[in-house]
Length: 168
Image (cartoon, rainbow, N blue to C red; front, side, top):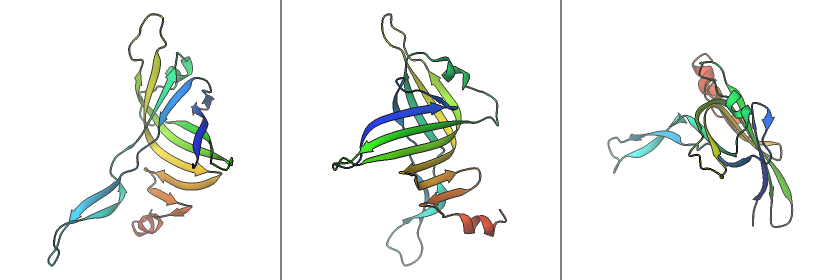
């Protein structure tokens, strides 16, 4: 058994939600591709385009009402806030590992769902992200900064030469 998630906590705009946050759907990373076919090939192949196919999105679910979540909602362009998820996993040998997901973006959807008398009302947030960094035990696994054209894997920026080639 490898890295079973034992505990997690979520932070929205620096405010912690231990005991309130119940689920996180971390961003899906899909590489943009295009089909390429030329003379002498038996058929098309997918070629990676050195960018992501879609905007980065994250979803969080919270149990109950908390005014800090409503205060984080903003409809003006240019304002982003930090979202952080911290997790603690344990492997089959009893060794624990610290996981960190640092994101920056804005709340796109705030969904209070259906209210029922006597029941908890989960609050769901969908966030559109500009920045995403994933670490395990303090070691960077990858960092994605869409606006600044950065895609780093294990500390190596895979787009550095492309940025230099276009004067960035």
